[in-house]
Image: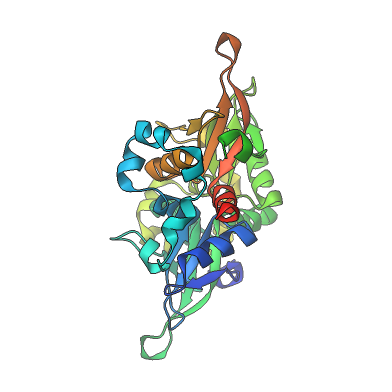
Length: 153
Length: 153
């Protein structure tokens, strides 16, 4: 069982798309995160739903639970307005993006070790191409890996 | 919109259940993680699929990508054997479990701030009961929170 056999298609969004569109995609497909690709289609980050949620609340409110308490309900119900005019790229934390990748020939051990090391449930399977153009074969999720290993037991 | 309105049922497993059973539940429902409850039904941790994957590979292999490479494919395909005889509790990292919780009256702002602060996509909504018996009303996922906020916009 190699990475190329485990890779599955995964929902992606362009980094220059509207951040609200990313919310719509996550909600419509009930996904915990979306793959962000650059305008040339090259994958370069995962945007977890929790990071998008973090964009809705200013940092000083995140850090102070008492402050979050005093913001009234009618305001709280319109938090998505904070995303207006922002792109998907704007929602990626500075210092990341970080997308764990592996080659198509990696074994289940290599993928499992990578997931454990960087504590991620998602690994991109990328084939090196000509002229430094990497091609995305798909994503391996922790659940998919567990499924294949369970069937092999 | 309050936590009690956002809380949904979430798949759980007992801490004394077989770890392989946790894998089966995650795979069958395509979940990124499962809620762990103690034998009295009290919620106390989230077990992410990536932590279960981490249990399959010894620490020294996780830390050394070259070592992971030399483990052959036929061995790699039987990684799930590492879970034999282990319970769900055995798969929870030492030092955690940590389950972010909130009360039923929390607003969307409070939940969003909590998710952002502890970088979690899951918050348990717990009602304090008599004799220190907390009752789980359900879980709020980041995707569910985004969905409700999107509809309110």
